[in-house]
Structures are given as structure tokens and as C-alpha cells.
Amino acid sequence: MKKFIKQLSVVSLVAGLFVGAGASVHAAEKEFEGKVVKVGVVGESDKDLWKYVAELAKDKEGIIIEVENLTDYNIPNQAVQDGSLDLNAFQHQIFLDEWNKANKGDIVSIGFTIVEPLGLYSAKVEKLEDLKDGATIAIPNDPSNGGRALLALELAGLIEVDDAKGILPTVKDVTKNEKNLKFEELEASQTARALQDVDASIINGNYAADAGLTVKDALFVDVENKEKLNDAYKNFIATRQADKDNPLYKKVVEIYQSEEVAKKIDEVTKGSKLPVW
Image (cartoon, rainbow, N blue to C red; front, top):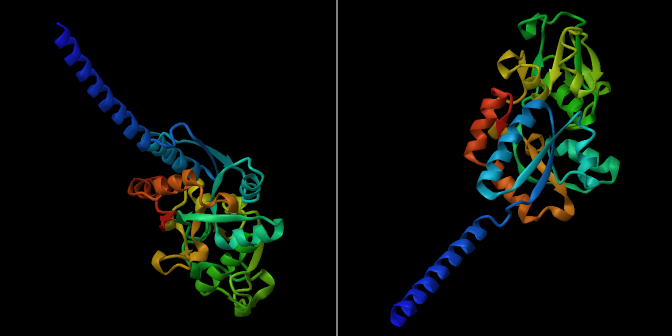
């Protein structure tokens, strides 16, 4: 009996070691278990997409992602800067550079996400050539998106702008306007809502998606080949400079940049956004 008890003790010890080893492996696999990351986005489609990312993060790594949908482009960077949010995902480099400069910020990109094709939409005409002389076009009023809108109209052959202004031209920099187009500068979030009041409107991808529009509905889209797209127009996940190497945030980027999320982007946005990592 003593020999049996001794053998049983050895077996129990070995089993315990295996269980302990298993627990260690499990712990290693889920090193971020229970960690909370607050992410700010802009637009319903982005919120829905990040809810899916949050599900993946919870299932794969035990990370809890809290998604906050903010009302416009002016809020997410400030929220990250003051620590209210850990990350945001809504902007491209041109917009961030302008924000950092104006607000003495130190927000940085830590991983590409999507590109939002900038489209010209209309509820009144079906083709570019049908835009009448003196037509009014709504464009975003912030420097980066407004500049991109004018460059898109130039690509469409409707206007020409001063090349010396680079990627940030303003309405004052339009050098050729044979159709005598008028420009109504609005908050980017309002350009879709203005469709019924103007002849055409330049609408960012997230707001187009929220309005039920796809790139197929556009008279013109500035991005047809994402491989040739300037990195400056690619959106990304951003955080504070001090946290750019945070392993938890890098793991969130890794989860986002997956095949599952690429498929979800197409499903949620119906082609109004394209993965670019």
C-alpha cells in the first residue's frame, strides 16, 4: 500500500507539472488577458467594423476594446492627446500633420488601416458632363480634406489648381474653372446631408457609407488603384508618441491587419473603404 501511495504521489506530481506547464502556455498565449484599450472612431460604419475587431481581440487575445464613435474629425486626436482614449482610427497623415501643428500635439501613426476613396456624388445628375455651368459643389472645409477634394475635382477634369500649393490647395488656388463652379465649404460630416441642396458634393468614404452610398454611386472617385495611392492619404491607427511601441497597442494593430478584418471591411462598407496594409 505504501508503495502504491508513493507511486500515486509521483504521478500526481508529474500531472501537476503538466497542468502547470499548460497554464503557463495558456498565460503566454493570453498575455494581454483583461487589458482594456479605448479606441475612438468617426462614423457608424467604422464603429461597426471596430466592434468586429473588438470581438476578434477578445476571442484571440482576451483584449477588451472599447469603441467610442465621435461626432466629427476635431475630437479624436484631442481625446488621445489628453488620455481619454488610447487609440484612434479615422485619419490620414495630412490631416494629422495639420492637427499636430495647430495643437502642438505628438500623435503618431502605428499601422495602416484603410483608404477612403473620396467621391463626387450628386442627387441631380448622373454623369460628370451633365453638371451645369455655375453648379454648386459642396466640399469639406478642413484643410486636408478640402485640399484633397479640389485635387479630386482637378483629376475629374472640372478645374485646375495651383501646383505650387501641393496637397493643400484652397478654393483661392483654383486657376481654371471653365464651368464657373461654385464651392460650398462645409464640415465634412455635412457634405452628404447637403446632397439635396447642391448640385454635387464631395463626400468622405465613412460619411458616404453612413448615407448608404457606395463608390458605384459616385460620379467620380479619386482612388481607383490603391497600390498607386500616396501614403499620405492612407488612414491609420494612431496614438501618443510615448506609446508608439506599446506591445498591447501593437497587438491591436496586428489583429486589425488580418484577413478576417479585410473581408469585414468590404462587407461593412460595401466597397467605400479599401484595406491598405
